[in-house]
Length: 261
Ligand code: F6R
Image (cartoon, rainbow, N blue to C red; front, side):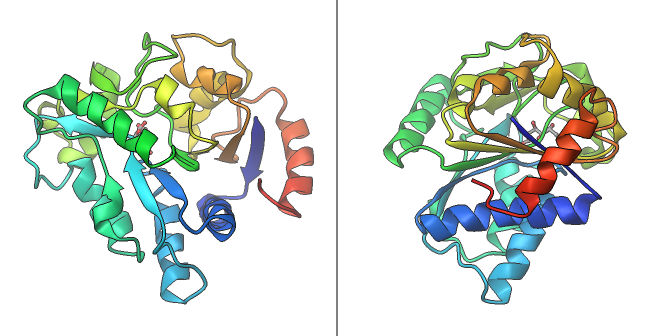
């Protein structure tokens, strides 16, 4: 696991965008894995800036979302498909018909999840997957106790996640759905390069577990320790509880000077 501690969100966004740009340069038809939530928003903004200035094109790419709420109207502002359209698709030059997400309105949820896995597989799998992390260590919506090998499925959100996400729903926890569809950790671990972004002290404990804790269903993100290619981009606050912080700072200097993958 490559841990990179950076001086603030702006640098995280630049490095996150560099990583995606390098994948796309090597493979213009890259399959991108997209996360929602606030952590990757600046990366999407930076990718948009680079596309607008002609430095980058994502026109050959396709993309898959990590997760989706169940029980929101398709056109609800906080449905993840809508969030990604607003924050990513509208800013870059990707073909929106090649951006896919789990179908939160499906009548047959089990079939929708199986179909989503097949779609990802038919696309050749995800080349580079952006991830955030929940304060409780979830990745996508794999909450504590989730299988570390699970596939895309319907899951229940914890009270903590619903409380954390209430800020997107006018601070009304009752407006936050109780259920979701999410890629499983087994699905996520098949992406070839995982790029996890975390900033702010609210993530410090989860980040410490992710990087240095024992692999445990109590902190689902710890399953990423078993993936061969993970880059973790952190600000100082998110990195503040890491025991080997000095070592990560020293080794990241080498990386910052060179290639990211
Ligand atoms: C969203 C997702 C979640 C978030 C996590 C952190 O697609 O998969 O795991 O990444 O809840 O959310 P933020 O970034 O809002 O702190």
